[in-house]
Length: 510
Image (cartoon, rainbow, N blue to C red; front, top):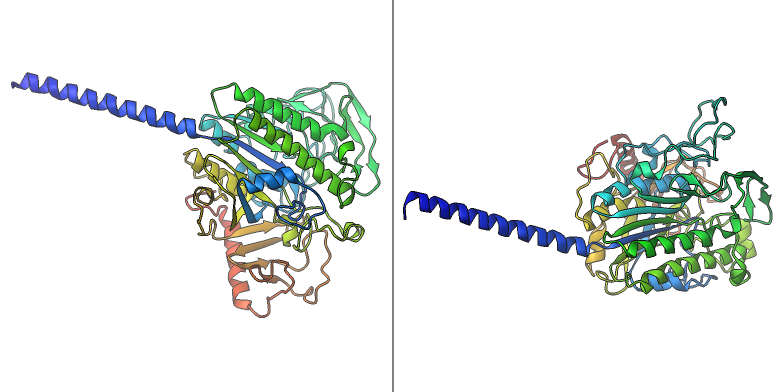
């Protein structure tokens, strides 16, 4: 064979191999794309660890739909919100980053607060758009919005993020200047913050549902049926919001079922946060008063959304995550009135607190195509971990300067007997800005008291810090600081290091 023929044969072989490799890659990528699940993340608002019967058999509230979700998936028993209150946890879910690294060092945002998340920060929606998903958010935002200023008005003086703007200089009749669209969400249907904080209106893709703004009078009784006086749109009905958000979610899923791309829907509900406004079918149906009735109503709305997935044949390849942004706002008076119901289970404290009742939350993951039977997972995980987990599931690489405090828990979902820890440690944060850190079975609290609304009546309340063995004392009844000073010192040093580093995920950077 002469040199010319050899060269032509070589070129032909190279071209053939190249085409074959390209075709295989395309087929492989296509197969991966087909396997990528739809993703539905449902975030309840102020739902406690003990509210659901799948976590607390003695719960006085029937929660059949969430119990079924648990039986069909993985029930995490040591899952935590990123904070003991609303806005910081939502920041962590969307960014994969502890919110104390943001300008918000304590408290929550108001309804007129500007955006907390920088427009150039990589978010969970950016991640999934990059993976080929349609992205949507429906529900309570509470991360600040870009409201336009009224022409000629005086701007408010600058203040800390937890100090709420009055909003008198802001125009809520016109379109937003920034919001979820700037953070990677293709579609949004929002209420600005909690349903007890004005303004009261719906925003669809940044546009108010009505440009007729009225004054909505507040309410402060009975307990839990509370909202503040403030501006809102004439078509806004506080009592109908939960059902309306559920219906919008169903509409979104139906619409997406007709498209070729998979979808990611973040569904932050407004319940059972105040105002407690269960609809007629649920009133008086629980053994935990109006609050319990509202939890039952919440369960029913989740059930309707899940039934929509079933009816469209989307159940098997939809990854559903259900959790809560913090613990229940279940105060001493509520406990006295309904002693059989323990909204936060055996956990100490409530929403706002550094104790477990403030931030240990229900966390359920269902994905029938990959999770074929129910199991409990005892690994310590955080809502922040959703971003790294979804990156792994969709085979995306996280940028080094993103998701700084997010860890991948997908091995727990994929392996029936996976027992390795997911994260080496976890930082907790209270409403007042108090810190604690969890490493293995040990939890160190950097200060005395709850850091929130609960009082410390324990014999060790005057100690400068707290140390609990969470394996043997999950109710935090014994402060072991004096008995284990070396462990406390090691955890204090670790907490300081992680706060100052700006990241905890290996490979990440500020």
